[in-house]
Each structure stands twice: as C-alpha cells, then as structure tokens.
Length: 236
Length: 236
DNA sequence: ACATCTAATATTGTCATACAAACTTGGGGT
DNA sequence: ACCCCAAGTTTGTATGACAATATTAGATGT
Image (cartoon, rainbow over all chains, first blue to last red; front, side):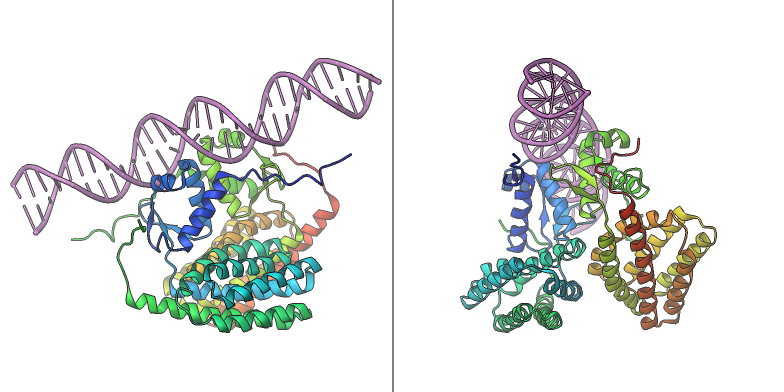
C-alpha cells in the first residue's frame, strides 16, 4: 500500500522564509521607511536569527526589488518613484490582462469558486474600511488569478511585482479616496470571469489597473513634491 | 576641488558574482544539463569558493529561474518546456516592443551609437557562424535596448528573462537553421531605430521575437518527443 | 537472484566565529 | 572652523559544527 499521496506535504518551515515574510511586512507597513538603511546585525537581533539567514532573506527581497544596494554596498529599503509605480502598473496591465484571459479559459471549477470567495471577502473588508485586511485580500485575489492562468512563466514574472504593489497600496490607502471606485471595478471583473467572458474580464482588469495606477501615481507625485529628505532611518 | 566624478567606480569584484556567472555559463553551455542536480559541496570544489558563496549564487540563479528546488530541497537545473519558452517569448514581446519604443524616444546619441556598434558585431558574428559569440552579442543587444528604455522597472522585469533566453538560444543554435532570417530581422530593427521610427522598430522587434519563438518552440517540442529521461546527472 | 529492511553516508539548513577590506565617526591638532 | 587620523562599524567571505532528512550500500531473508 502506498500512502505517499495521502501524506501531508511536509514543509519544515524554514527560518529563512519566516525572516523574509517578517521583513516584507516590516517594509510594507512602513516600519522601515523608503530609503532606510537595513543593517544586518540589527535585523539579526530584531528577528532573532543568525546573520546567515538574514543575508539570505535580504537577497530574496533584493530579487523582489523591495530593497536595493546603495553605492557603498549598504542595503536600503527601495524608494519607489511615481515613475516606477507608473511602469509597474503598465506592466501589470500587460501581464494581468493576459493572466485573467487565461484564467477564464483554463481555470477549473474549484479555482473559480475560490476566486469568488476571495472576492466576497474583499467586498466585506471594503465595506468595513478594514485596510490591512483589504490589502492582504487584494494580494490574494491577484495571486489566485496568476495561479489559475496556469503559466509558470507568467506567474514568475508577475508575482514579484505584487510585493511592491502591496507596499504601494498600503501607502496609498493611508489616505481614503478611491475605495468605492475599486469596488465596482472588482465586481465587474468577477462578473465577467463568472460569465466566462475573457474579453470583458481583461477589459475590466485593464480599467481597474489604470484607475489604481492613476490614484497611486497621483499620491506619489504629491509626496515627492512635499518632502525630499536626504537620509532616513528606520523607525525605532 | 571635487574629484568625485572622475573617480573610477570601484567594483571589488565579489566572489559571489564570479560564482554566479560561472554557474550561469555552466548551465547555458549544457555542462549541467536540464534537470541535473546541483550539490553544494561539488560546486564549492568546482568553483573553488566556500559554501557560503555557492549558496548565495544558487539563490540568485533561483531568482532568475535558472535552477529550481526539487521536492526534497535539492537544487536542480531548470527544465524549460516548450510551453515555458512560448510564454517567455510572449512576455518578451510585450515588454521589449515597449522597451524599444522607449529606446527610440528616450535614448541619447551615445546609446544609439553603441547599439549600432553591437549590431555591427552581431552581423559579423552571424556571417562567421560564430555561435558562442553570437549569443553573447545578442544578449548585449537586448540589454542595451532595455537600458536605453530608461525604465528601471522594465529593466528589472525583462532582464531576468534574458538569462533563460540565452540558455534557450544556445540550445536552439546547436542546430543551424534560422540564422539568416535573424539577420534581416535585426537589420530592420536597427534601421527603424536609426530612423527614429518607434512604430516600425516595435513591429520589427515583434516580428523578430515571434520568429525566434517559433524556432525555439519547434526545437523544444521535437526534443520533448524524443527523450524523456527520468534522471540526469551533471556531465563529468 | 531478488526484494526488503537497516545502518552508514551525504546533503541541506542553520548557527557561531573569525577576519580582511572598506566605510563611518569622533576627536584631536592646527 | 577645518583637516586628518585612529577606533569602531559594516559587509563579504571562509570555516567548522550540528541536527534533521535523504540517499545509498549492505546485510538479510526467501
């Protein structure tokens, strides 16, 4: 008898993964603000792990472009300019309209059901103005679309962008504003997906991303005008 | 007096970077064939560096998707399927047509001159059927286009794909075939760039990538039919 | 000879240390 | 004030260690 298929996939939770998600959260939430220098030894203490693990985590964040190396080899939280954000959303529009088309064409029943469930949670969080939840759920929504598109490559290329999108979203949501707009856009997307209409779904995604882009770019441009600090340190 | 601008940017050549490019070459060239398991200790000996550095290099290659982790945590050379290749080229078409448009619009005189020079070297290598050179020069061509597009984000997203493209190209070029076709396509691209015609440049890039994609996908599909070995080891 | 279980060996993930080279900083000294 | 050097930091790399798994090679029974 073969129990292989039944066995729970063992994921002995690596220290490194834990460190990565802690750091990602710290950056997204603004604990380490844009431009802040990340010193290995300090992160070791903060995370309670060895330098080995911290360094591996930093390399991962580097490949996600959440941190960048300064001229002096220092690691700093990435500064995302309005131009960067505009480009990120332009590229997402290319990739994710394609992804949602494939989702409509290739996803199975379970995946569509799961996406609908996420959408439902999204609506609820939106109605409660529960920002932190909202951001997490939105990320899950995009990720499920990418997974359902069933293309390893699309996933690999688009997914790393979501880390920065999350980071941007949390910043742009600090201010209220375009939350209601987002609701209708998501409804339209979900509606098209459930109707199996790839064209409409892609268009809804495009509209959604263009609006989100406009909102975030406007926010960043406003920020850039007000403050151009020379150096920033991490929050104590 | 300020000499800052004159000083050569010191790049104390990290061991890690050396290891990364060695490994990339070893994979591209087929020394470590698709699916081969990469054992840290062996790489240490082969490269003459410590495990610390090997591990950092492997993580970098992992973020470039040149290697992948097996279920048992082993690191294996990525197996790129025909489907993967098709997707890679589809995404490149999206990104690099956009990139070359921006190149036409935003590059300065020096960048265009440099691109033309690369094109010239490309033509020469092509006429000599100098495959290894050809591949290196083609990579440089794409990279210059990405840099001249002056978008950090486009560069960050598109550039990692080039590692795998290089790997694919070397494989597909093992056979002769579509080299002459490539020549005309590159000429057309260069021509449009020098004429400052973004639309034509983008179209030439699109045609080029679609043809390259067809050639490579055909090659991989043929390979996949002939051989499906269970395990592969590195070449001794 | 063949399948199977077991003990020996390898491999990975993580930590702790060490040290050189490069960088930063805090004080003198002028 | 300004300049320069010594001391302390920080990063990159190497080495060694060890637990937890994997894998392999043997030993064993049929």
